[in-house]
Image (cartoon, rainbow, N blue to C red; front, side, top):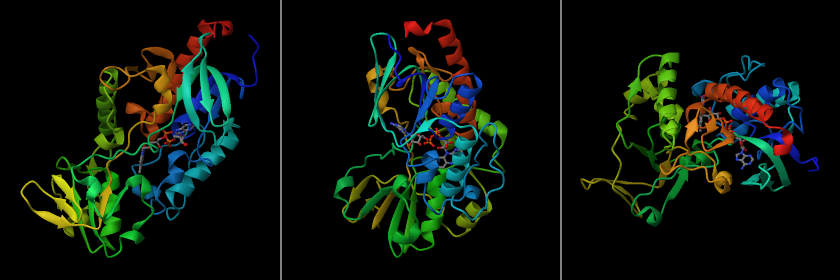
Length: 360
Ligand code: FAD
């Protein structure tokens, strides 16, 4: 079989934290840029999903960005938006290691080919690969729960992924839905300018005392790992680490902002109504309800187990050892993504070394 300029050994889809980490380890494992490995990324520039996060997000307000392997982030200006800081950092990283990233390239689907290679179909043509590292994150798949009456609501509904800052909430009555860190932080920003806010979560929120420790992180990762090894859809690892008492959340508590309400039963044109009949007139419902893994482009590979998730062993898909998912499930954090990149490359190196290239 002729090898064309569009055949690579390992294709990496996505060049966020996870994809760049994979690129770094692929290079270290001796894969040649372009022919040995290639990264395809849908973004308009470096930064992964961070480049699309809201302009008021600062790195000081997140759990913490772990350094990519081989280049430290350093001490960025705390007043610059996280979107800019991370885009600069990832851009410098790509240049330092000369990583072959093609963008903007949107992968539409990945299919099996008769000879055992994978066909990667994109809006910039087709490639083939012997193995695949999928690192497409979650940002492009916001999760919207459904509540009765939702589409009758006369006001505005938006998701965290749509948030561009508090200005549009000025003088509005806002319901913030969701129990994660984003919900709490955005509630704080919005409450400064809104006429009134209500915070609504499915389960009573649990705030942890003290800093986020490594032990707490490990416990959260272990819980999500167990889920994906059983073939169930993963919960968010950043989500299961829980909320933390910080000067910000203590201030919010003192101001009465954290008087959480349970989920409402239905949505009306003018607001939300709880099971006991109480209600809140709202102009805006803000769904800070998280994200799901971006995997639609892998549907033709039929990786899903009956439980709706993908049966995983570490980063490897159990039913198709050519395919690794990183930044998925237990590795969906910046530190997890780094390690997952390394682990996936190690296994793929072994797989490809064991199978001559002519066998696909
Ligand atoms: P992403 O950064 O999402 O990168 C995926 C890349 O894949 C993107 O560039 C995208 O364009 C590309 N892509 C997607 N689909 C396709 C396709 N079909 N074809 C081609 N390219 C595609 N984690 C932490 O550890 N610490 C934190 O403080 C933290 N804060 C967070 C705050 C928010 C608001 C959110 C939503 C998440 C946060 N996380 C945090 C989790 C965070 O998303 C991950 O840790 C990590 O940044 C994800 O990296 P990634 O490489 O997996 O995905």
